[in-house]
Length: 558
Image (cartoon, rainbow, N blue to C red; front, side, top):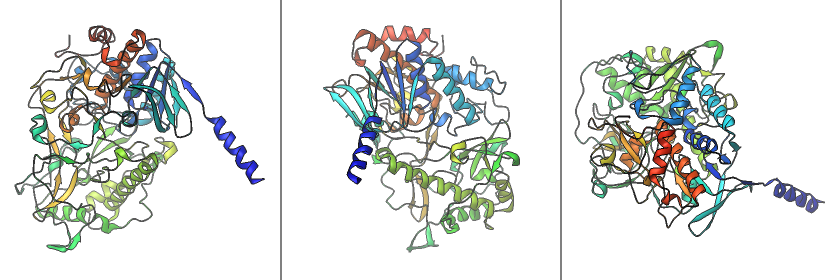
């Protein structure tokens, strides 16, 4: 009887698998994935959008509620259309022909848009549906089948098979690219490799004490930004202060600092971008993890102690910059000891889906515990505790996950290595790029790679927060989103594109990914129509179509 039952279950499982065929298959339901799928469908192709999770929009609908862009005039096409639709949901009209001017800080200034996550996801869903895109959720990639340099099908963990003529990888991690055998890196290049000033291991090597009294500016802009503690005062990392033999405190990593400028592994710290509310009627409590232990946050207590010793007027913004959103909601970004958990992200890019779930839970538990610590621990100033106690998780956001975001902020993962590698020299405007498909304009923003010890003091190795020396918006080149010809000729990669660690730190903004993904989809359709490899798409033809579709490819725009 057991054998018969097992056979029936096996047959049922086998029959459940499906073969899904289309002209274009977009893997990854991120913001760029939706933009790509919509573009290809509007161009008359059958399109399948395969998403491993249960939601569309990636970080743009997953908690990144104040979206950084840089100069909004550099954003066009479907990205501009999307944000225009989204702003309209709260009666806001965006002026795309000029820089957004600050009005005391907060979103909708400097290129950041105030977003309620559920409305963001709704707009993505509507755009995909209206374009006729077939969306398949729960599509967890198991393997890729190729004939020569050509992908023929994707096989999912549940047995489903996706076949198409051209594929797009719009995942944050570059999962399809990796399984297709395309070259990539997880190393931070050294300065010598591409001649980059900010490449490789980087940290402040000189202790510069701060003695001034700090007060937060509007909407959480703390003078000194995220570097408020790094080399401003020495934070002792040891369990017993001054005694290395006592071991390191929790949240401090083992390891040597290394030599500045040398190559090193490691990706930026991840976090959750929280949408919190101050409306009691729409609020759920932010409960700590079951194993909550305030001792885990001893280094935070020492940070508080150091700030108070020099007279800082501390409030919640020392830990989480927070910007107002519509309907009594707030976008919480990490600052100082905030949601970032350096080191915990390093295994993510190569991890399995099951392993990623564990890593995501580790980040969530850390963040929940930190917020509980800030709300309840007596070592935290009363002003900070009362401030934190005002906030809860919104009942009407992430309703299938108890108000907690469904998307962890994958700031960096695999990066393709192709014939063109975007570098700091491109993003800083020192070197032009041919075949523009999108523009980038944001500064060089790297969250810490490691929180380690140097000379008995805690440092944030890898942290970079700088502009681009006043350079204008720069082009992202078409050759940075196509693999080497011999590796794959019917795949485009737009999130895990070919870029150095430093260049990626500027390119990695969601609107840029949306623009580059729309351009990639346009190229994919042309490759299908002409029966060509993606490397052979006629750029002048591509450029003409992108301009017709209101993409911005030149600076100043024309």
